[in-house]
Length: 99
Length: 163
Picture (tube, chains in turn purple, red):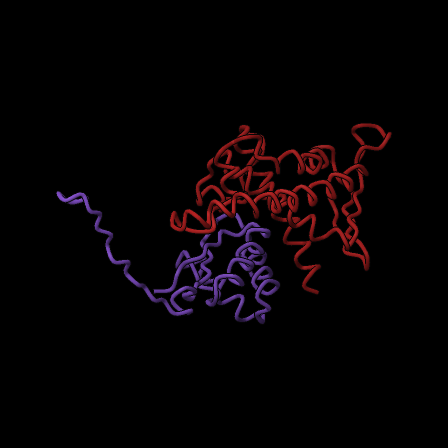
């Protein structure tokens, strides 16, 4: 309120966001865990993502040697479902926004 | 101990009382018992400290689902382990048959148990790589032996599920 008693209402700012902004790609990262067996992790990648054995093994080895591997990237909803499945298999998996 | 793969089951025979007892302990070992580190390992965060809303939703909707999933697996395993509670002499060797349709439950329960034991004991990566430590040194050594024994069974079951 100013000295004259009138109320000034700030102009609402209009913010436009495209659908892509609202649902930026997300990536699924699996982190290293010294307890989970390598063969078990490979099997989980095959089952959850349907990856062929060689690709699943490549990701498993990346997790083992580099501490993490990006398994998949895409929209949030399927990404959440994938992470839920990975947690169901007791892997350390997280969702991260790309960029 | 002998372990054989058959068409519709895995048979573990000549189980001495010590190994039979370790198997009996799978369901109990899979329980975090309120130990924070174990609880956090079984129910890990879906993000790395970011997205608090997502984490809150996860706790509310996903965690209960996961709890049910893990409990169902340990219950299946506990039922199979009833075979080890016969009326035979307590020191006699025993046989356990794991039906093929229970393999996923066994993989899950063994994994839960290994993760919980490791979290409760705060084992280092070096300790976890030591597969030849005797189980009779200390309670900690026994826990490490338990992790390795359960890991051996997991490997065997995995070979079965792949073939």
